[in-house]
Image (cartoon, rainbow, N blue to C red; front, side):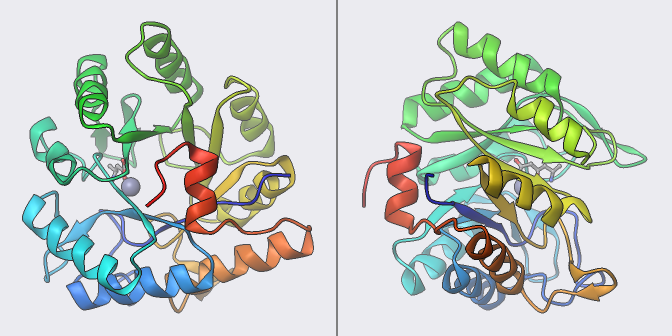
Length: 274
Ligand code: KMH
Ligand code: ZN
């Protein structure tokens, strides 16, 4: 079976130090969390950034400072900035990290209720605008799908040539407003993508490790991190993103699945080698 790519979603835009003190806000904290994740076995860092007070931002200057600082410590890691940002940001605000021409970036494939009061807006016009910008820069999109309908949207845009092969999906399960974290729904999602595409799964909260296990067995890939889940086990906060990654590595080892290095992850995803 293909080696397992582990993505560490180290920060997100919603989780705060009040939820887990390891959530990074400062440049030094971002470097620490990225490095601990990488040393534990992550080959991709899914990156949102914050100002020092914890406010999420898509400011390209802040992204550059944090990406450069991470690259200085761990030059071969794949950095995948978010173009989702935080709920309420404008399209152009969200797109700023693309100006740094990262290897990959997220492409959110639809609109959904995001928790009890927010709506995460991604109209088809927005998705096309983001996809075309990624195409023009040679940035590989990770297709973030929070529901089956978003896979259908991605496939429609793929048919029109707007989303290119090979497609790589991120199934996000368990957001309040998105698809559930049940095994039935995971199987539904993974059976809904073309066989020549790849996927990673991000289970929110208690679904983080159950769906990681399912993806390890299935030959998919796994995303974990404080963006999605702050606990290492029921009622116990994770000490770091690295601790969450290390748990996935242990699960994979038990099941006989080797972990991909960044170079191997680039090979699997069709990225240029560094
Ligand atoms: N913060 C969420 C509203 C992404 O990174 O592309 C959007 C998000 C998705 O986290
Ligand atoms: Zn994100």
